[in-house]
Amino acid sequence: MRSLSAFLLLLCLQRGKPDESAAARRPNIIIIMADDMGFDDVSFRGGREFLTPNIDALAYHGRLLDRFYAPAMCTPSRGALLSGRYPIHTGTQHFVISNKEPWALTLNATLMPEIFKGAGYSTNLVGKWHLGFSRPEYTPTRRGFDYHFGYWGAYIDYFQRRSKMPVANYSLGYDFRRNMELECRDRGAYVTDLLTAEAERLIKDHADKEQPLFLMLSHLAAHTANKDDPLQAPEEEIQKFAYIKDPNRRKYAAIISKLDQSVGRIMSTLAATDQLENSIVIFYSDNGAPSLGMFANTGSNFPLRGQKNTPWEGGVRVAGAIWSSKLQARGSIFSQPLYVADWLPTLSHAAGIELDSSLKLDGIDLWPELSGSADAPHVPREILHILDDIWRVAALQLGQWKYVNGTTAAGRYDSLLTYRELDDLDPRESRYAVTVRNSATSRALSRYDLRRLTQQRISITRRLAAVRCGDLQRSCNPLLEECLYDISTDPCEQNNLVYSERHSDVLAALRRRVRELRASASRPGNRASMPEADPALHTCAWESFEVLKPGIVPLECDYDGVPC
Figure 1 (tube, rainbow, N blue to C red):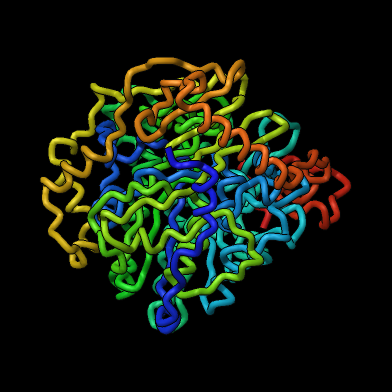
Figure 2: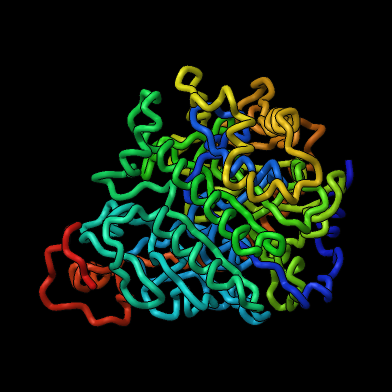
């Protein structure tokens, strides 16, 4: 086989420069991010329990991102997106930032909104941040966003916008802002609709402006809300899925349905304001679903093993799609492995922005491959899924090879955790292609098709997008042994090759690369919780508690009082 040291050398080669002519009319960039959505909870993979016609249409009219990877938790994933770096290089490799902890994504990183703002973009974040807020300088509008409408922390109630941290004696706190100020209007509105309406407003406001738009719509869906009522959706939406027997799964389907509608609304608004042709639209989930355990939402990562916060494919391989009129191969599957940190250099190239080498990015520019022909050769690359020396777990991918050493949660979530429901089928499944073509997204995009989106093309793409597992040959217990997989033929991680003499050189190269990456790692930024963070000391709101002086007498905080 080709030597992996030579493989790594190829990663350092420069592969094309941004087109300077793009600076004349930079594209709008819209990133729609789901939170904790399962790999199999989009119906373009073949699931039939509930449909996602708008998300599916984005994939069918654009490019379905078949092998899209992201870190397995919220904070590391979002940090990698915005910094273009591995979590080990931003101090976010160990665990998420809890609302009560005084730390943030390193201030030494130059973030995507800062770069795009410097190139003349209006930079906007609608929704979740989760990269630190204990000091004002950690918050979105101090990290490159011109505007933020949403919440600073990990999650909120879908109707009342409050959150209570688990496993801690902290009060319920309000967490929703317009820039730095608390925002309490539209009380009781469903947050998916609220965030979508704000994104629509921003798109409409930019219709007549020459300034390009950078918009990140970072949804709460499908993360759970607070422990007392974790799965929330409007009752009329839940009733659409009355055929689903599991009441929690029924609510989850409704949450995803509202998310899918959000995608359709955004695409329709771009089309109605004549901004779609000059826009790049990306949809994806920040990580796999937590099917079981903390924040379990019933999401399915079938047929992949593992879930959120594990090193397995079910935690790190996510659903995704991209559309742009600039894509030559619209209507095809993009099978090149793609990592979330790639978006910074990739979108910069698409926008004609030259990046400074001092950024020290781990992501690579894949715009030539994304925008090029369907048969463009794959770029050799590595993806560090996790390297956490506190939990003693590492997972590294080099080309087709994936190495796992150690795991999380004592291996409780290492297996295949969910199966497809064969009886509770969406009634629209019998007319699936018609449902997709009648979606708001398909109606907006069909005029730009290179080829008409026929039922046959939908069926072929859906069949090709389905992940097929091989036979279980040699399992691996990561608590006792190293694991090595050929992901290209074994996507469900069922055949451990670590004892194969034929793969000894591959194993040695992966071990060596893990050691090199470990030597380059920053210290994890995690810090102990502070009592001063308690919302009861800050008029029942989550505030920048390292700076804001706490009250003397704690308040009684509940869902009813408004802290504005």
